[in-house]
Figure 1: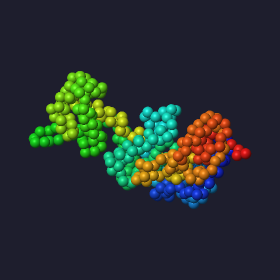
Figure 2 (figure 1 turned 90 degrees about the vertical axis):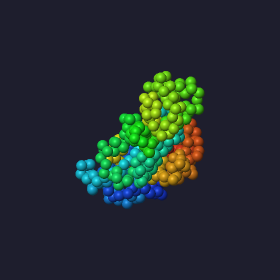
Figure 3 (figure 1 turned 45 degrees about the vertical axis):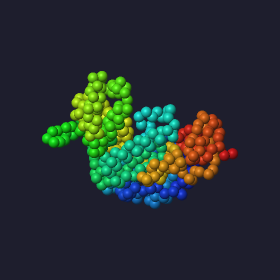
Figure 4 (figure 1 turned 120 degrees about the vertical axis):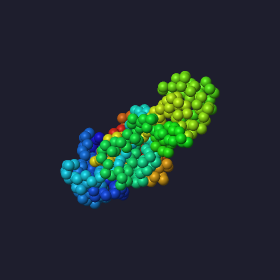
Length: 387
């Protein structure tokens, strides 16, 4: 980044912070604080091991320093400003989840547009929230658009604050369906003096697999026998013989599937359950970034600050507003709306922000400021002289 672009961005970030205040987390005085300034050259410098006392008045600090990126620790410490981690005195930590579109299965950053990546990431966020709210029954959740390509979820329930890295990894493994065992989703129940094995349909992965099983069985009933047999044989481990057994079991005992009974069809139905469990595990997981969640001392982006790689606001989202939240509209700083600037680009580009589609040609362009800042922070444009 050249000097003119860097100084322009730092100045405009400072203008933003003179009108906007960062959103401080609970127990802000117990957190470590860090930021990345607008240093010359291609490298970056992280300034960390600071306490809230070291920053002084937060609004003044941000207005004067206009950091490129700003962070706070998930952890609470006795002495958050201590110069080494061992001296800080760890107390507890929020449980933090990070979803990044770059890491989503099937998303290629080279071929997927920014709006498409954000849409895929929001779908993954809904799946993550389903786990956190329904499977774990967490109550104290804060959802944040990262300002870049994804979302953060902060869990601050008292029950999770003291968990060590290994306990947090178990939560990660559950959410990502690592080593999901179909047998573990089945329980044995007694009924009229006999026992039977049924899926755990009351919640969790058992309920997800049961829902897939019911839907799959309903689809088979709508097909003719040959088509249903071929559909079953598409699943791993199910040949013609097992397919016939499964179809026969469904015909003899049509209520067994809705009861979650995996005994009614013998090994064939159990193999179907195993195949569907593998399919559900591949489609219903939330591809969270494991190191973020397992790290009990992680620094995470501070809400209401600017992301130095996009110029967008790191935006906390009210749970009831999440469905309507559009990061390409709602995270655009109002401070950067309403005037045009001149930039230079080395290639033709398209920016979709704030409800506008801005076409940028190679060379000098006059564009809305929010689009110019977006491209400059990403290293895809430079600030041009306004003359």
